[in-house]
View 1 (cartoon, rainbow, N blue to C red):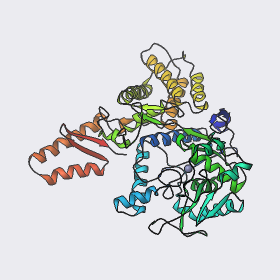
View 2: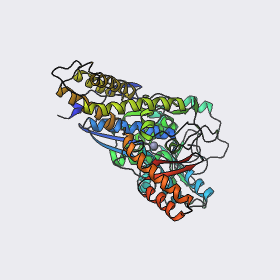
View 3: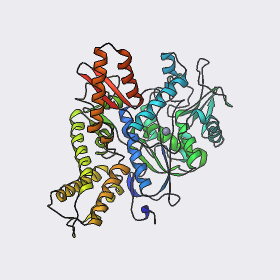
View 4: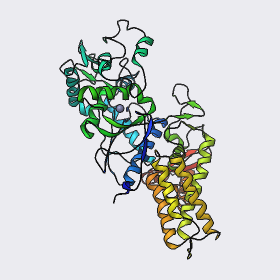
Length: 493
Ligand SMILES: [Zn+2]
C-alpha cells in the first residue's frame, strides 16, 4: 500500500484561503506546476527560497509515494520590465546593455540558475519547458480566447478583455482584487496604449523592428505576453485541470489571476485545484533590492564574499535555515540568524553520527512509533517544516540520552529511529552532510597540505607548479580563494 494512503495530507489553498485535504485528480498521481525564473540576471536569494520550498513539497509528495510530474518553466521571452505590458523585454534589454544576443543572456542565466539550485540540493523538475519553445502553442491558445470572445486585436497586438470576462466569470477570484475598485483607482489611459481599459493584459504584442525576439503570428510579427506561457505550458504538460500550481506570493496578482482567466476563457474550466504561494525573504528586516544595496547573492553566502556575513555558510546550512520557517511565513535573513541555524544544523548532523554507534537493550523508554507519526503529522499539516525540525530535535534529544545511558532503546526501535531521522533530514528536507564537502578533517588536511605546497612554489616563483595545483584542485571541484588572510577553499558541487 502506498504511503499516502496512511497519511492525511492537508494543504493551504490560496484560492479558498483554507486548509483542505489533498485529493489529487487521479489517485496516486500529482501534477504540479511552479512558475520558474525569468533568466535575465542572477537568481535572487528570495527566489531560491521559493524554489526550495517547492522542492521540499515535491520531495515530500514523492516520499508519500505519489508519482509526481513537476513542471517548472524557464521564461526566456515576453516578460516586460514592469510586469504589465509596458516597457522593454527584460532579456532583450540586458542583451542590448551587454551587447550580446538575447539567447546568450538566456543561456548564461539559465546555467547560473541550475548551478545555484543544484548547490542548494534542489531536485530538477520532471519537465522544464521554455516560453520560446512553445510559441506555436501560445498562438493556438490566443486563437481560442479570441474565438470565445474574451480578447480583441488592436494594430497587431491582442489583449485579454478583463471586463468582458468578468461579466460571466470572476476576475479577482484568487487575489481578492475587486475589479470595480481597480478601475476606479487606476489612471485613465492617456493614448499611450492600445488597450480598451487598463486592466486588460497582452496576449500578443506587436514587436518593433529593432526587437530581436519576435515571431510571426496571424496578427503581427511579435511576441507572446508573459502570463500566457504558464497557462499554455501547464495545460500542455499537465492537462486542462491539474492538482497544484505554485509560485512566489508576488506572482498571485496579476500573473496567477491572469493565468486563471486565460485558462477559463480558453478551456471553460478553472485550471488548478490547489494554489500554493511561498512567502518572501527579507534581509536585515528590509525588503531585498539590488537598487538599495540591501541584497545578497546566493553564491556570496557559501563563497564568503559578502561583508554582510561574518564568514561563509555551506549551502545545507542555508537550506536548514530557510526550512526552519514555514513556507508561508516571511523569513528574515541576517548574520545572527544564519549563525544560530548553523549551530542547530551541526547539532543535528552530530546526532546523525551518534545514532550509528548506539547500544541497544531489551526495552525502550522512548515511543519511537508515536514520534515518527508526529514527524509525519508536521509535514501533513501544510508542510510544516519548523514543527518537523522541532520533532527531529526531539529525536536528537533521545539519541543523546541513549548515548549517555540515561535511557534505553531496543534494536528494532533504534532501527526505526535511525531510518526516520535519516529519511526526514536527507530525503524530505533535502539537507546534506557538509562533512562530505568541506570541514571533514581528512579533506581539510589534504587541501591544506596542497595549499602549503602551492605557497612554497609561489615563494620560489615556480608559477607553473602553483597554477597546476590550483587548476587540478579546481578540476576536482575544489576552488582556492586567495585573500589578505591567506588561502582558503570551497567545494563546488
Ligand atoms: Zn507563471
